Image 1 (tube, rainbow, N blue to C red):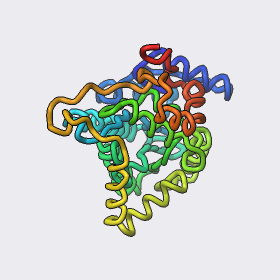
Image 2 (cartoon, rainbow, N blue to C red; image 1 turned 90 degrees about the horizontal axis):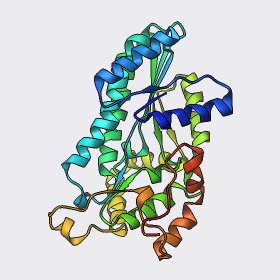
Image 3 (cartoon, rainbow, N blue to C red; image 1 turned 90 degrees about the vertical axis):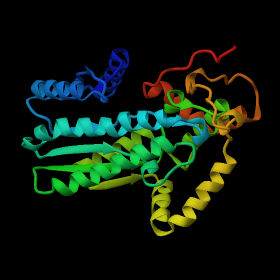
Image 4 (cartoon, helix red, strand yellow; image 1 turned 180 degrees about the vertical axis):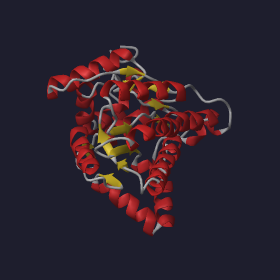
Length: 298
């Protein structure tokens, strides 16, 4: 496993070892840095004598109306999400080609890569690029001894809402995002999603869209894109609006991480969030997300 934070990697490795008995090695690596990725891949290939499966799943989530963002938010998303996938793929392909079992490359996109999601536009743009990368690699490498599988998960109960960054009206953005991402029926448990991904990799599938809601959204966008865009516009109007200063083009307030947002006040938005986000809140510690401390001001 590779990530930027050594402590988080240690906890993640311990989580896997405790539940599976497997031996896990870790490498500190920022996937935005091509040289660091090249070094990490070489180290992993040397330690294992080969690479059979490589999964690219790094990303950042910023939730805000576009009026509260600047071009830097799009650049950051593209560098981390798309650039990270490109760096990982390009460094891994030579090793995967030499796999005796036939290499498997896994790229994690999103339902946001199938259609633009309001208040997640930089994320959607970058995930769409990952989806295109996966399809293109699959087509160009069809004759090689490897397969490329692209996954488009829908809403996942991973606890990532505490790591996401929120702008515009951060507390309200946090409320709807964490509640929807943890809502029963429309969201999927992370372990169940991982099982589906493993099975698809075993079968060398080209693409897999996870959750019925994500499949329906992707199908609707393909069949009736104009209607879907209109519905997205309606959803955007129902979401929290950008403060007047941001809407007027002046500098927006800095984004806030989910774990630092004040959630102690018994407002209606927090009551709604707690009602819908119970499962997602329980996933925070289970899936190695940063556990929030006392709410700001408490």
